[in-house]
Length: 82
Image (cartoon, rainbow, N blue to C red; front, side):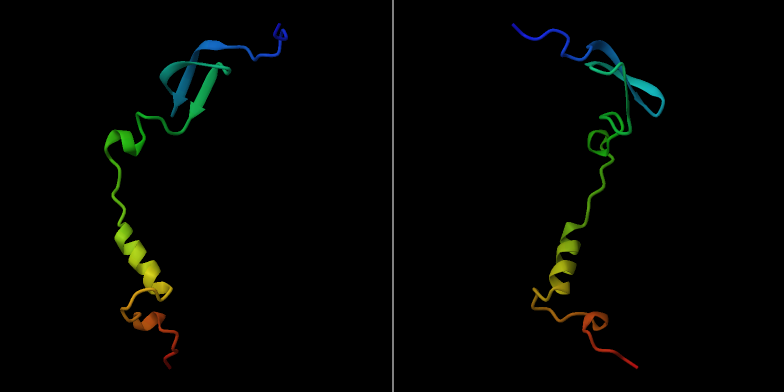
């Protein structure tokens, strides 16, 4: 037989708040949940996601650590100009 009184209280109508507004009702062990991001304002779900220039970041990394055949820019060559 399972032990009695070891489980938390279940709230089947727990409110989820985002920016002071109730955004959904779910079942939870807490009566209220306050969140910063939910599917209604997350960039992935709203379609406002920014496209990151990953190619530029990879090329910059490769250049920085000398993994490209291209010559490094003058300011990263290590020589000091006076």
